[in-house]
Length: 190
Image (cartoon, rainbow, N blue to C red):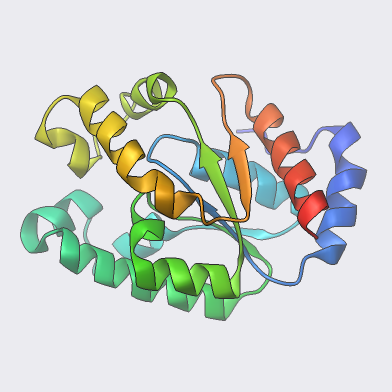
């Protein structure tokens, strides 16, 4: 995967990176592109990228589907909150992609809003269905029709996601379009 930034955005990103004084946390639905966009954004801003789901799996020494199956969602969310708290404490110069439900937990949301600059990556349900179909590791989508589950989850989670100070729509186009929107949002916020 080529993570090199486009030349036109490099100077803009460098200016934004100089003004950042805290982590960037990407929140939003599963499949919206938090990890793939986050990696590119981190490279562009010369920051470390961390996927909280990867960190949870490393800490638990088991996959997220295994955690859900063995211990349930409440147990997973508690561990998720602790891992995100650790990530926020360890580095002020990183980009963190969170799991889709992380920001919906009131304690986790409060922590993220206090310690980081939060960006809500949003997308329509059709795009989410298409993207989530690429992987078979989404425990919440194994409980019925993925389109219906995604539509219901998105509707339930919008109030929490809308607390993020920056809102960016991620379409089915190239990630560079989403990154440009993120940079514009950061530029206005900082």
